Length: 294
Ligand code: AMP
Image (cartoon, rainbow, N blue to C red; front, top):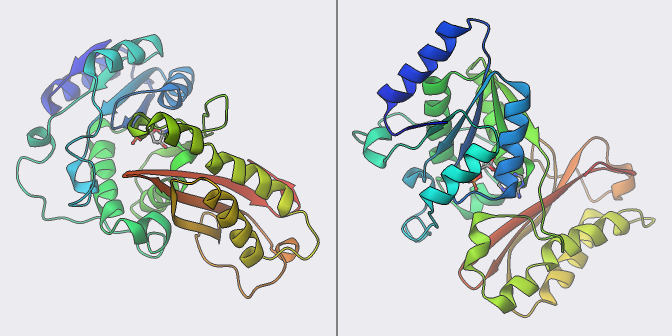
């Protein structure tokens, strides 16, 4: 496995791969590091499906708001490199901020509509930062496939839209959410939780599991479902709900009217964001009313 800290080193490695095999396919796994089993599952899938896999580790300042956790975002380079190596990565691209943004970028990548709700509403500018850095990574690595977790379902929808709109020649591969044994979705931010908050955080996945039963109840509407999910989450004393929403997926629109969920056509997402102290956690589940898909 090769570690590249500069774009020049990365380009050189990619050229060598293509020179030794002009049919080589490249998989890209973009991350912010502090890797866990969720990231590892993406790496393994990339390693299985491609000749070579690139893992990018970059805590992108542009996707953090002024009062968010950019400065204290957890970092552990040595551990990340060991995990990357164990999970089939060939190249780790770990640039610093100056390498990615030698000067203030004047170009914006703004995906409209899909970014208006959920984390787009709670974190203004977040997806503009994500769009810019992911499009830069796509241009730098020119991957055949790029792997993203369904944990960040809105991010996946935004990146798929950006890729389609700009005809970027990459296949976006959605990967399932990896969870702790008690159901908590793995996240680099889980380390911020106190022991008590960690115990309470299981309420996110619990409320999604309950919702899978509740949607089957006759006459259940999205308003009723959201109210029940909010009530369940509020049982956790330290939970502060940011949003609970039921939207079409991947178009992220409100369902028309307040029809019972049984009458909803197509795919829906139940998306949650909940704060425990200063730690904000997200989770979601997909539904095709009458058939559970996630
Ligand atoms: P991050 O480092 O948090 O920006 O995440 C990098 C990639 O890993 C994103 O595509 C995430 O959706 C994905 N990811 C993070 N946590 C999980 C998880 N628990 N299961 C699956 N994918 C995940």
